[in-house]
Amino acid sequence: MSTQTSSACRRSNVTITGASSTSSAIVFLHGLGSDQTSWRLLAPAFEDRYRVVRLDLVGAGQSDATAYDYARHGSLAAHADDLLAVLQELDLQSIIFVGHSVSSMIGVLAAIKEPARFGKLILLAPSPRFINAEGYAGGFAQKDIDELLAAMENNYPGWSQGIAPVMMGTERPELVMELTNSFMQTNPAIAQHFARVTFFSDHRSDLPLLTTPTLILQCAHDVIAPLAVGTYLNENLMDSQLVVIDTPGHCAHLTAPEQTLREIAFFLSMPDYSPSLN
Image (tube, rainbow, N blue to C red; front, side, top):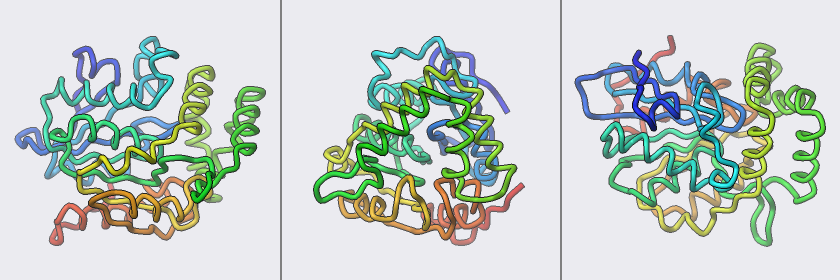
C-alpha cells in the first residue's frame, strides 16, 4: 500500500493498492460519518485486476481537516472538485467509481463535469434528495431532517450512538460500534456541517446530464434511501441499471459484501471472475 504525498492526494489521504502495472483504476469514496476503511471488505477483491484507489472526503478520516472550508464545502460540488483534483493528480481516465450514499452523488457531479475521467459508476445506496417533495419520495419529511440535525448539534455523542444502528440496520454490535466510532473520530463541527449539506442537497435536475454507464445498488430495507429513490434514479439516468441487495440498512458493503461484490463483478463484465473476501 502506498500513501500519496502530493497536494490533492495528501489532502484526501489517498491510498493506492493493487495492480500497479495496469492503467485501469477503481476508486472508492465513502459516505457520511465513515472513511476509506469502510471499503475493507470490497476493495481488496479487485487488487489483482485494478489499481485500487481509496480516499477520504476532506474533513473525514485521516484527511487534512484544516482544508475543510465551511463556505466552499457548503455544497457537494466542492467535494466533487476535491475528487477530480485527486484524479487529475494521478492522471486517471475512464475510472470505475464506487461511491456510497452521499458520495454517490459526489461521483455523479464529478462525472458530469469531466466525463472522460469516468468509465463506469457504481452507486451504493444513493440519493439525489433525501427530503420528500411533490411527486418524489425521498424518505424524510422536512421536520424529520430538522429534528435529526438538531439532535446532532445538541448531543453529538448520543446522536452518533443512535444513528449508527439505524444506518447499519443490523444487530451486529461490531458493525454498529465501528460506525459509531467513525462518527466520534470526526470533528463534530465538520460532521454537523457536512450532514446539513448532505441532507439539504437536491441534485435531481443533474441526473439527465450524466452519460456514464451506471449501476445502482439499492438496499432492500433502507430507511435512509428507500427503494423508491433507487427506482427514481434508474428512471432518470440515461444509462443505468438497478439491482436490489437483500440486506437491511444503508451499508450493503458491510452487511452483505458477498452479494455486493458479485453484482459489481457482473456489471464490470467479469462473468469468469469470482471475487472473494479476505
